[in-house]
Image (cartoon, rainbow, N blue to C red; front, side, top):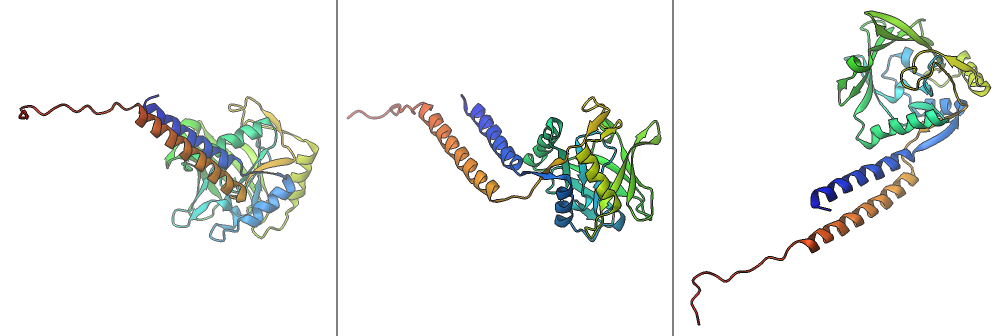
Length: 273
């Protein structure tokens, strides 16, 4: 294996080990416990009041249940939220095979320095309508996967509609309900959310029909949640770092050992003794 191939292999190994560290941050909590944990972790008072709290993606047929917009960074001047995919305690996913696959995909964003973000930009006055775009490295993917929106249907932000732009018009995709307010108080929709997860209620819709080839799903009571760094991740980082350095040093020594020895030729015109 040449130096270039060795470098590529070491880079790939480093990315894999970094990915495994982030993947190990997974937590499995019940839907009710997950909502409370998310609320306690995020209290962003700079955000508009209607969007604060924990939102239940009630009609979403993707294997995901809850989202905390307060996990994102809010810019008051542009009225924009940037929510990093995989941010700690920001999103929950089903504990079935599709949920694990989505969690694994989102975790890749963290392993590659978090270029993927959800950009939510609110209108100027009412914070009633917000456009939603997926961005990679600051570049919008709206042209490729579509432009989305969130429309508030009440005065306080307890009820929202998820919309999608199609044929120059906003079309309804699914409804969103707030289950915990900005102070962590349980709202009437909280018990509805828990009941739907525990009873195995079937959710019908078209959100994930193109991704997972399904128009209906069942939300699991046990939800996957991306947690903070803990001692486990510190130990894994140290262990994987030592492993990577050991392999790198071995590769360097092998390359040096295979390098040809320099040949010394007598100087031309050297006077004979």
